Length: 376
Image 1 (cartoon, one colour):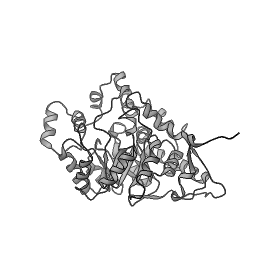
Image 2 (tube, helix red, strand yellow; image 1 turned 90 degrees about the vertical axis):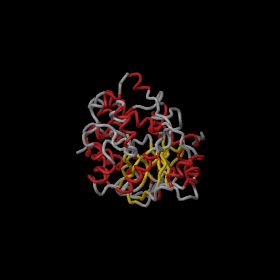
Image 3 (cartoon, one colour; image 1 turned 30 degrees about the vertical axis):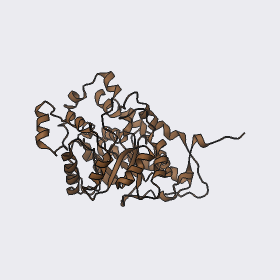
Image 4 (cartoon, one colour; image 1 turned 120 degrees about the vertical axis):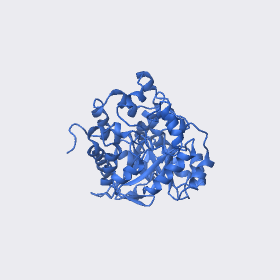
């Protein structure tokens, strides 16, 4: 049954605000700095206007498509979102079950509270991607790749926009000790297994949850040479998450990866960068002529947002925070409700714009408001 009093995805954020402790809500909701990018990632979609065609609609548009050759029921996937077990006791397992049942991809975060293997084993039939970073210790990189291969993951997602962790001003202002507070909700990070001796040293020093270790592993000077090295380690498709420029998109093509996620890390890293939807066309145009697939992550809150991203050139979009709000609200069923709402809205937008299937959604259906003129 649909939740009463909820008519759009953003309503769920307000609905769950009081269902979890403030520090936990702030952790999931916060952005970096003054949260300019966090806010603009949503607002920017409004700057793109729809240009519908008439007398060509379908009552039941076909939302099916493929992502890296995998059939999906809707061009929507689940972004790597950390610490989901703090949002619901079943955490990543509930999300994976929802993804499986609706026919979409789930990306399992390296900050998951379940091991990659557990998610794959306990939720058979779901299409999983494994997320990692270009860690300081290469043993962690190799370990996650081999485990993902052995567990049947379909792709690797390397988040490349985090040589340091963003500064969360909201957490600083609230004086929340996140590490201390999270100890009530989580056994800690469980996917760091590449160098057992090093990990035990960090735990012995007092870092029982491995939060400090995980942060330390991000702070490095990795470069495109390292991405090419990772490319040589595996036959799994590789997707780079965090690309916002044409220059980096072309570097990704040269590195031999299969996909790009245009993303600002949910506004949680460098504050003040462009909203992903504003950067999407530049990235899509930069890789034309290659086999690179381009996706988008950030600010998607409606089926119309999905339509706009697909029209500009994204093959699929990914959501993070809405999944968390769904988990807090009602676990697996809450995530399904979020996805079903997005599916219904996208289907309606396709019908009203005159698109019978995903391939018919092209750039002429969307125009940035800066390109629109009014002649009186």
